[in-house]
Length: 230
Ligand code: UTP
Image (cartoon, rainbow, N blue to C red; front, side, top):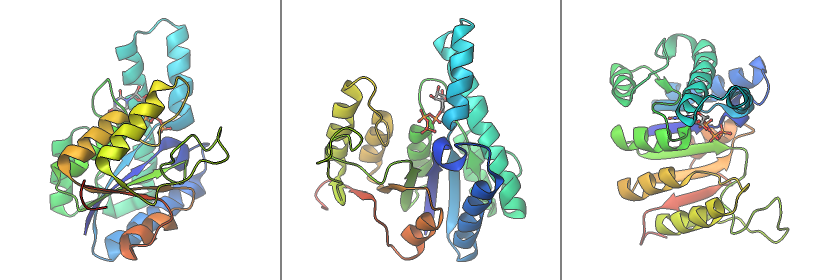
């Protein structure tokens, strides 16, 4: 199976913990060894937010702040590349084309951000579309997509499966509430919708969950399916 794994920065490197990065490299390496084609996108997490905050105080404009964020996502990509060793493309792929070429060579490409004005959620969906991936996994800091904010509403329930057009509606609702954090952003949801790709949003705290979702088709997250297939 060809799979793109999106690892949120807050999942891969909430703090600088080499063991956590090694755990992810291990799970991805197991997928690679089992014959799956794997592409990875890393987010920026807390470190990106701190850098962006500092740059904002220094009066950087939004585009400049995005470039700061992209630099941190690529720094996280380098950490994962170090942990993956020989199997990884040696440099973070800065474009989708570079990533696809690495995948065709049989390497594991690791991308961070690509262009300003988006997040790595959208990078992951665009890359999955570009390489015709069978599956896109979002390893996030939340255990799936909920019908309300689980941090605020004790009755919030997790969707086990969700039609992609419903995902777009849920995310649009969340993004209208200032301060709320959507499990994937709206641009990513729209890209998933147009490409018809199968996607899973799951709790990425334990990297083995990513391995099981691909290798055993077993997970406790939310599965996003094309409309009409729920
Ligand atoms: P992230 O993808 O990590 O943002 O990119 P996020 O979703 O807010 O954070 P986590 O990791 O899921 O917690 C960090 C920042 O980098 C810039 C944006 O400013 C983004 O907020 N970025 C990232 C881009 O401008 N373009 C990209 O393609 C990716």
